[in-house]
Amino acid sequence: MGNREDLLAGARKAILERGLAKVTARDIATAAGVSLAAIGYHFGSKDRLVTEALTEGVGGGIGDRMEEAIRAVAGRSPGDSVGDTWDGMLAIMRDHREDMMLSLENIVRIARSRESQQYMAEASAHAHHDLAAALGETHPDLTDDQAHALAKLLFTLFQGVAMLWLAAPGSDLLDGEELALAVEALKKT
Image 1 (cartoon, rainbow, N blue to C red):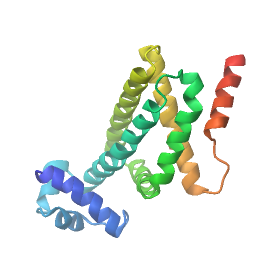
Image 2: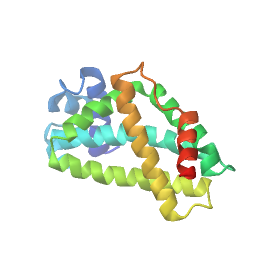
Image 3: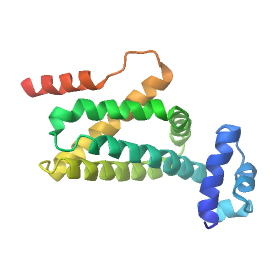
Image 4: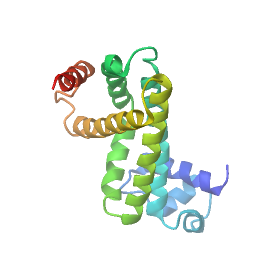
C-alpha cells in the first residue's frame, strides 16, 4: 500500500478506536505510520480524509452486500422479488450497526462542508450506478432507466430506514412483506 491507502486505513482504525469526534490528524497519521504532512499532501485536509475513509470503507462493504441482496433473487421479476431484496437490505443494517453509526456521524459532519457534500454527491451517484448494474444483470428485462430508478429507490429507502433504525431501534420498520404490499398497491392505482 502507498501513503494514500495507508492513510485511508489508518483513519478508519483511529476513528474506530477514538471515535469520530475525538480523532485527531496526529492519531490518523500515527495509525497509518506516515507523517502528518502526508494528510495535507494526499487529501488537503483531515476532514476530506475522514470523509473519503468512511465513505469508501463503510460504503464499500455495505455496497457489496447490497449488490449481493439484489443478485440473490436472480430468476425472479423485480416486482415479485422486491420484498426478499428488501429483507436482504435490512439484514445488512443489522450486521453492520457500528458501520451505520459511523456513517450517521459522518453524514452530520458532511452536511456542514460544501467540499464534502460534493464528494458525497459523487459517491452516491457511483453507488446508484453500481446498484443499477447489479439490478440490470439480475433482471435483464429492466431498461437502463428502470434499473437506475430502482437503484435510487432502494438506496434512498436504505438510507432513510437506516437513520430511523439507528434513532429508534424498537420502531416498526418497513419490512420486505410491507414493501411488496406497497408496490402492489401502487400498481393498482
